[in-house]
Length: 363
Image 1 (spheres, rainbow, N blue to C red):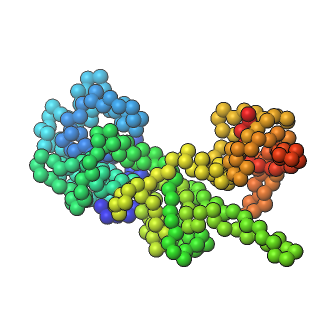
Image 2 (spheres, helix red, strand yellow; image 1 turned 90 degrees about the vertical axis):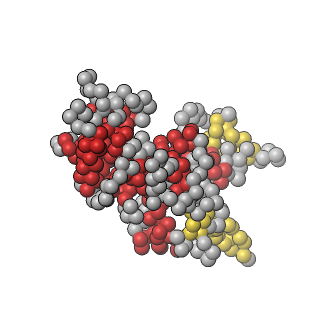
Image 3 (cartoon, one colour; image 1 turned 90 degrees about the horizontal axis):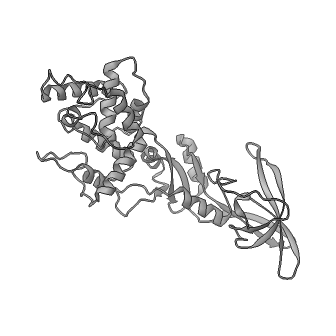
């Protein structure tokens, strides 16, 4: 399971449409039902009853609803009355192997613990640490130890944390959302070098944030304008957790990613959207992820008193004058909205400033 594209292939299985092929559909659902539940073994799948699941995960409930029948005791149609548990497990093994093969995953299935091994690989692909994976699966009573994480020290996780890890893997496998992460450039590396490598290797982020500030200096009678990073070498980027391994495989000699702990094998640290939003408001620069008109935003009209909540003027009061639409020229022309405000200084001299709406709150 060292295939760097393993998780991508599993995602292809999630998206595959096998509604016209009963055996492949059943194999697909057996694979996903096991993974969504933290790696159920063949025997656990074989004996799973239709009323056993009581959770709210939509991806799991969708599978449960597909196979639940009024007269069925067990969830999956495996001819329980005609087959022994060993025969049912063998049938499941065959169905799962065929489903995985359909998306290019060729694996030797030689143990009842294979689905747990598959979950471990999926969890690693989703960015979880080996210690957390080992804690979620553990060793069986038969002494089975997965070679996938046998080298790792088992992290001490609460049951709540184990549930969070399993939910995270399920979410990434079924939906594969984007998260914010941070990377630090290595010495003597600048943003242009990172961009050049990304273009050369075809790396794309959903969004990135490397804010620059303008420095104005007077030399003689001329004003010289230059820019510099707000925090040199610190870049925030939004991408799927499943893309991180490939990203740092290509950028690892130029930058390293912040992790959730000091351990080399720990997961890359996810930065909450709210933290990114707060940081952007504090420095007065934004990506499109911060809503220009957040929920609960009060309509501002001429003469209203407002407070500036970010940037260099944070905390200052002002009077709203008008809303202006302007076109920003760049690689593509973009229309944006700005607010024109009137501020009054201590000497009663007023001046006009134009600010992003996301930096203004009505009082």
